[in-house]
Length: 90
Image (cartoon, rainbow, N blue to C red):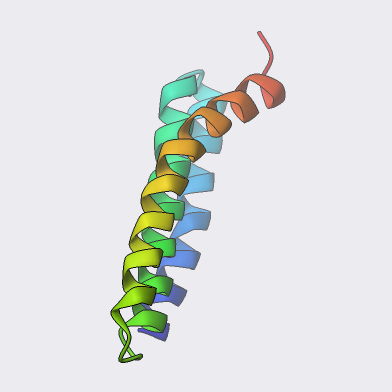
């Protein structure tokens, strides 16, 4: 599980590089930025949560981790759009 998490974290830098290329080419939009940021970070959060909570015998942690991931995705999308507007003003 640690190797998968490491691969995802390194892959996140690939997402940042892709978004930098899109910005240079003028193809980066608010929605693309927000979706790619939230998707990559949510995947990292799921992997980290599964590695932590699957090793324990309590299902409460898995439930809390799942709810936290869903809440992060729902709240993270508008926040990522706001960050895009702050960093790349029109």
